[in-house]
Amino acid sequence: MADYEEKSYWLGSSPYEESPPLDGSTKVDVAIVGGGFCGLSTAYYLKRAEPSLRVAVLEDRVVGYGASGRNAGFAMTLMGFTLSITNLRFGKEKAKQAHDFAHRAVDHIGQMVDAHSIDCDYEKPGLLTVALNPAQAKRLQEEIELAEKLGIEGLKWLDAHMMQAEVHSPTYLGARWEEQCALINPAKYVRGLKRVALEHGVEVYERTPVEAAHLRRTPHLDTRTAWWRRRRWCSPRTPSPGASPSCATSSSPSSPTSSSRSRSLTSSWAASAGAPARGSRTGAT
Ligand SMILES: Cc1cc2nc3c(=O)[nH]c(=O)nc-3n(C[C@H](O)[C@H](O)[C@H](O)COP(=O)(O)OP(=O)(O)OC[C@H]3O[C@@H](n4cnc5c(N)ncnc54)[C@H](O)[C@@H]3O)c2cc1C
Image 1 (cartoon, rainbow, N blue to C red):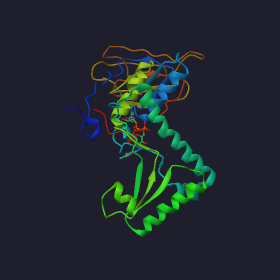
Image 2: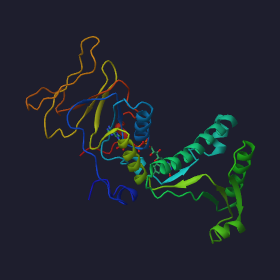
Image 3: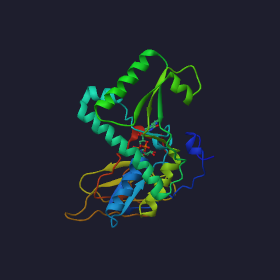
Image 4: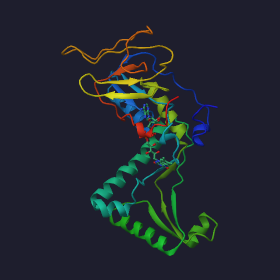
């Protein structure tokens, strides 16, 4: 069993073929660290906007290994804060803007699924946020009133009787119904995004943990791909003035390395979209 399959129900729910790691050193225009929703979408949109760019995604394990392959699969307008909390903290205008943005994001997932035939068990059943006690019912009703004041459509209150028709249970006093919510298998979606990115010419390297990012002078990343297979030496650190990013590899076991591990290198003129988040890593093999 592959090391990711048991990390979530989704990651083990369909067969998956990994892309090979970065083998050796290479130069790209943009190197993106992390093959989650953000990294793959950024790569895809960069390539779509400027096909001549060479764009690479470097993923520690496999795409979707992080939150993108382990979430609940709700494509919804909730972005951490409820509408009323966003309104309290940032005011009406920002709350409405945030909601509108999230609304478009849900549509965007549906559009990606349709446009690229991404098989991710997509359905759009809407969202019920249920009330189990009167205090919850009041809060949900207030949310709906606030949404109406802000000009947000697609929300309504279902009373206990209407809830019975939806879910035949005496537990619920009512629910806030929101039309704008879809369900996906997120691992299948992120793998679909990878396929779409590849089709547009993005390079995706899996099993390629980035160990360090050097973003000044000649930007480059240190990876640890297959370091046990071959020792490498990369030396772009002191380029001559005006020189473009450069790198060298050597298969000689005695080549100098600046760490106890050998390293490969990716040069780029743009910073990575996702910083090499050591905290979010779960370790490398
Ligand atoms: C339990 C849970 C449930 C959630 N439920 C929902 C939900 O229902 N709906 C919703 O919209 N959102 C949900 N979220 C949030 C959502 O999953 C995240 O916001 C989203 O997946 C973040 O995507 P990302 O690309 O930024 O990060 P990630 O998917 O975490 O991608 C980061 C990638 O970078 C890789 N990486 C890290 N360090 C390195 C390195 N040094 N070198 C190379 N690669 C590296 C990781 O392996 C990972 O694949 C949930 C999150 C969690 C944790």
